[in-house]
Image (cartoon, rainbow over the protein chains, first blue to last red):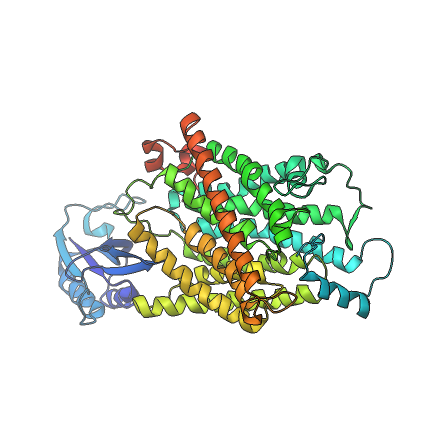
Length: 112
Length: 426
């Protein structure tokens, strides 16, 4: 099993979700996060006071998939999240040791 | 313009009223005037929660309830103080030039039949009471996020006795020295705005900066709340200014229209300044600018035509924007810009009244140099008095009970530490 973590632009979330569904992924988790990378932050003005905001809003999605589905899922995210502009985000793939479906007690890929 | 005003400016308007003939010719109170004054009183009271929201959106989430409470507690303590003694000290009989008498303690002697002009005196008293409530609440914007709730509450009660009541008497009370001199303050440019703005500055010089200011970020936590509050302030300000005619008459209508126009122009002025300086007009700028316009037209609302109100309001937006930017350089922490908007805007408005008044009063544009001079005297006197008394009062309170919360409490936030609550929980 593989866990795919992707940090994407918030407004791409719906497209990424649809692309993952098409690739056969049946569930995912999305979290609102803040961070920065090469895109850097921006400045905000409040009554003349200028603030540099380093952390910018992003969405982090997490999916756990069987090994054979991982390449297709990564490709789906890559394609659907890309705008070509700086700040499109990153995808990480991690190995997963175990999964449990709490309701039934199923283990491993059965639980996904 | 108060019913007892002996100044010459009101004479032509009153004469006209008598010649044309008012709609009401009975012996009791005029129902139309009374209804408008009561409605206006309610409108001015609504400005206090409006102000609370306006300020509340600009602080950090951990201090939201604390900030709202600094305005709300004024509705509690000042409404009582006003009935007990405030009204009498401001408007009581056996008047001197500096302070009113003690004959109206607990509003004694004011029955439903007691009239002032065309309205029951009780209606006038409650209307004035709303002004007394909102003025110290205005100061709270400078003190938020670090002032002790109890010390602040005591401060505003003492401030009402020592600063507000005397100033109201000087400008509006029978025998008040600025009234005698002919100073024009239609609805409180000096009494409310100069006094609160300058007092805010004096208070923060004693209280000190918020921890981390200005290196840490103090970003407003909810500007939607601030815009809602600004909208309520604009709405309530119709009672504040048009109600100050103390009658449902042409002067009230003029004040209403000029007030609306100046608020709009103030918003445009501030937004234009922001656009030039930072490239983008902001929502907080719109809210701040309209308040600046409202502040500036307050002393002249019943004397200035809507055309000139565009100039008064528009310049208020520009001037107050500059004043607020200046704070950064001067290095004091007027947290929500009470001095920059109310002090500077109120002073500009009082002077602007001496420049642009054409209805029932003279000014620079009608060739009345003296009136402008009187306006300058009014602003300077109110500012110096409010600053000195507030500074001394704050020093005394700070040395005795302490004005400021502990550094730990400031870090945790005053909602939890002062009130045992949080504004938001999931």
